Amino acid sequence: MTDLAIRPYDPRDSEQLWRVLEPVFRAGDTYAIDPDIPREDAIAYWTGPGRSVFSATLGGSFSGSYYILRNQAGGGSHVCNCGFVTDPAQKGRGVARGMLEHALQTARDMGFHAMQFNFVVSTNTRAVGLWERGGFDIVGRLPNAFHHPTKGYVDALVMYKTLKADPSAGKDT
Image (cartoon, one colour):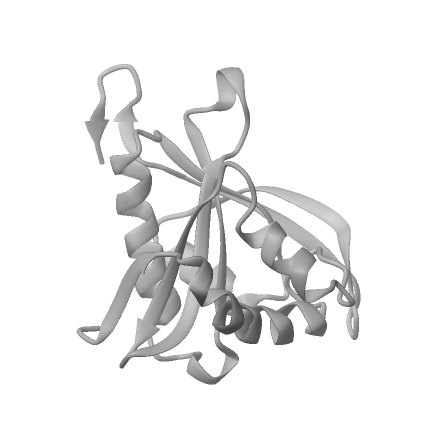
């Protein structure tokens, strides 16, 4: 996608970020976030400490955001975790795919050896499919771990992708 641009988040993006986060969080069907989360708390969550946050624009319009952070401290600090949000009006236009490609390269550049999604709601088939096409494996299933607003209790998935063939050798895959 040639007109997709991804850059570091600027606090001046907060209104546009909220415009994208609000419908996703309010829907309550993909993130384990209180659907009534106030704007300030949502922005603070998304841009919180330890997170590198990026903004995506498509044709100059704010279209999504992602963050990347260490999944764990200490012995698990070589694995990163990410969160992604796309403007519902931009779905199907390659924004999430472009952000994933950017995030994978960013993770490698930051020295991470793997990327893990800790809690992918199984009914979020667009995300599951995108992560699988991006080379992620489902390595765990948490039965009935998410209470979906219309489908009841559904599974959450743990998805994982190795970024380096041999972490001790530092070879990229």
